Image (cartoon, rainbow, N blue to C red):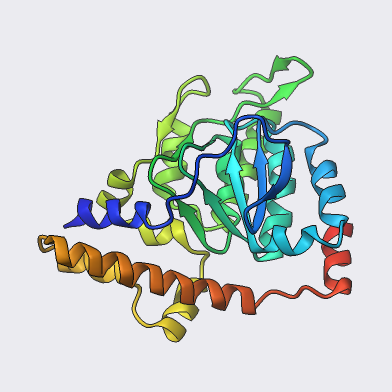
Length: 258
């Protein structure tokens, strides 16, 4: 039951594969796409994009991610904007979200992963110029602790942080739906701290958690019902998320100015 439910959960929001040649940030479906290696200066480019009147609404609605990572300090700056925008994050089918990109994904209020997409983490790698900083240095330790504290504040489960710290920067720990289900973390990584309680008060019990408690076998008809229940619940939760956003000019200007 646990693996069947996790597979259903990750296939509910299957989207089209993201094109390989897209810009660093561009309009995509009803949201925006952030794609490619995260580099210094990307935050400023994203701010420039968001300043356009047509783009803030897209940014606040859904941010699609397709990145193997990059500059972790720049990623935290982008994640902070995402966090305060009350956006949803989504890794679509065929896309990857590794390393620093995972910080962006965790900054969403609701976080979706399509079937065929991949999440992955490893120990951070901090560079000064072209050279990596010694991982035993005080400077590295301070940055690593700061990043971990930030990720904890986003609601990143301890089990994922431990896997991140235990995986060499040249390797990758793939966060599979089966592993999340086994660790009972699917709900924890899918919704911001506190939001799940508000969503259940509005939309009723979260069906994934109910399914994991049941642990029974799913027949073909049961699977269709579960997909429909999960879709309906997520739609209700996303409507709640959107209702908590403020899209007025003053709020937008304040977010961009920070």
